[in-house]
Image (cartoon, rainbow, N blue to C red; front, side, top):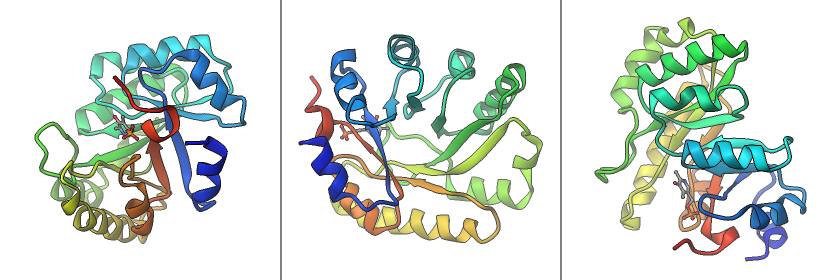
Length: 210
Ligand SMILES: *Cc1c(COP(=O)(O)O)cnc(C)c1O
C-alpha cells in the first residue's frame, strides 16, 4: 500500500513502526525519504547491520525475541525494545544501560495469546512486580508501556485486545506509561479500537515476506 495514504488513514496519536525485517536497505530508504523515522526489526544482527548502513537519525525498535547475551549489541543506540518478556532480561538491559550510561526505553511484552511460540509476562507476574515496586531498582531502564501479539486465530483477538487495553488503563492510574504496542498488518484496526497507540506494520508497507 502507498505509505503516505496508509499514514493518513491512521489516527494521528498512533505511532507507526515500519517493520523492515528481511527487507533490503533500498526499500527502507524509500520509506525514510518520505520522512518516516521509526523502523522495527526482529533480529539483533539484522538490526545492527541496518543501523550501520542507514542514516543515524532513525529510531530503531527491537520487536522480536531478545536473548540476554545479545543486549550488548543494541544497548548503545536502541530507541525502544518492545519484547521484554522476563525480569532476567530486564535486569540485563539495566546492566547494559549502566555500562553505556544511558536509560534504555522498553515495553513489557504480555502473553495475551495461547499460541505456543508467543512469549511474554503473564498478567499475574506483572501484578506482583508492579505491587512490589520491583521495577524501581532498575535505574537504567524506563518502562514506557506494554506490547502484545494477538493469536493467529483472529476470532480471539477482540477479547485479547480488550483485556490488554483494560490492563494498560489500570496500570496507567498508578504509573505514567505511554504506549500500548498492539497491532500488525492484519489486526491493527481492531487494535486501535482497543486503544493501541503504537502499531508494528510490516507486510502492508513493504509487501509480503518470503
Ligand atoms: C513481523 C512482525 C510484525 C509485522 O508483521 P506484519 O504482519 O508484516 O505487519 C509485527 N510484530 C512483530 C513482533 C513481528 O515479528
